[in-house]
Amino acid sequence: MILSCGVDIVSNKRIDDILNKWGVRFLGKVFPEGVDYCYKKRVGEITGCIAARFALKEAIIKAVSTMGVNITFSDIVIENGGKDLNVFVKDLPYKLLYSISHEKEYSIAFVNIIKES
Image 1 (cartoon, one colour):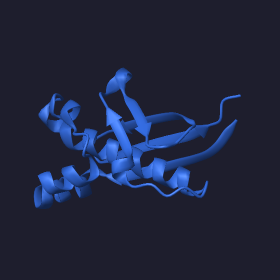
Image 2 (cartoon, helix red, strand yellow):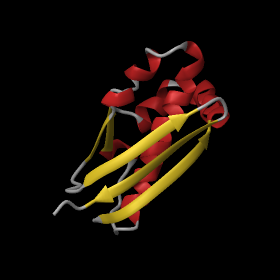
Image 3 (spheres, one colour):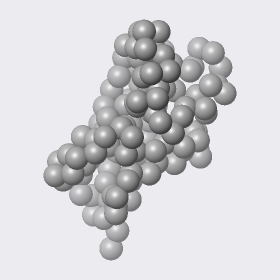
C-alpha cells in the first residue's frame, strides 16, 4: 500500500552555483554520507548527479512530512548510484520506491513510501 509520495525538480545551474559558492560546506551539510559516486562520473555529469541526489532527499522529506514525520538531510543516506543506488532513512520502518534522473538543465526525483503487508 502506498502511504505517501513526493517529487522534486532542481535546476542544475542552481546546484552548480551553490557548489561554487559553498563547496565542501554544502556537501557536508546535505550529504554527510558523501557523494563519491558522483565524482566517478564524467566531468559534465557531476553537478547533475549531485542535483538528482539533492532532489531525492527533498522528495523524501516532502513524502514523510505528509505522514507527520520530520526529518533532515542528514537522516537520509544515499549510497552508490545507477542500478546500485541505495537509500536509507533513519527510523523509517517503511520501504521506499524511488527514481532519479538528470539531464543538462534539470534533475528530478520521485519517491513512494510503501507499507508492505
